[in-house]
Image (cartoon, rainbow, N blue to C red; front, side, top):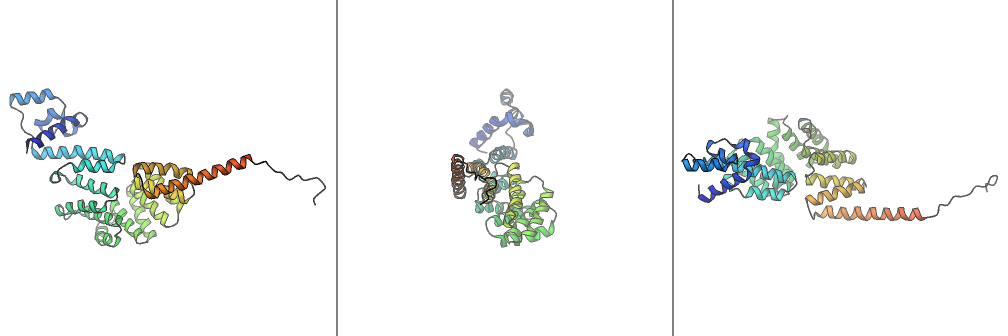
Length: 305
């Protein structure tokens, strides 16, 4: 291990130890660092009892700390920053969980090829992991290749027909094929197994929207973004449904939330202009009607001509 890597790891541990100490002090020789007690570290150096931590232990701790930071950023919708954090770990030191998280983050920002590359990397290491087949199929479907996704996913869903994430992916693939009834059943079963999952709710919203059930779509998307306010795509699709329903005041609020998550999105910018102009026209009309004299036809008793 190079001295620069060693210093980097020590600094990282020292900076974050106070918040994360309890869970990671698995090696006696790094307990002092993780407890935030520099005196203990110095004492061990001076008496010769401090030994260099095991390389694998350091890599795992570093990976976990970076992953927690990335998850925190993702929870605020800052996906690009989260990707940058994980990209700062040397590729050969990335663990399974961090590579999977990178795939998820790239998929969230619509960089499907990068997401696929991460899954392919993991599949080279774990060729029998069917959860990776599921992830690959889902990304392919999101990337507009439902036929390829179905080819990968069909044996998976046959092997594990009652696993929530697999049912959700299967339902998404069926929806991409226009089989909305079957898609709704699959995603509905997935939601029963994973209540509160924002992506499953968004998929149910998408299925309802494409089936022409706008009120149902609104309810699904509303629940989705309630569970995950930083879910940019969910916010965008929720705005789309509200615009189609003509609920412009609500749409305005959702559009602004979505634009904070995906600044400059062309659809959102267009919808914001449409909602603003429609509401402005409505307010002008209301003001004009309020200023108009109230005309009441007088009916004279006995004269109905």
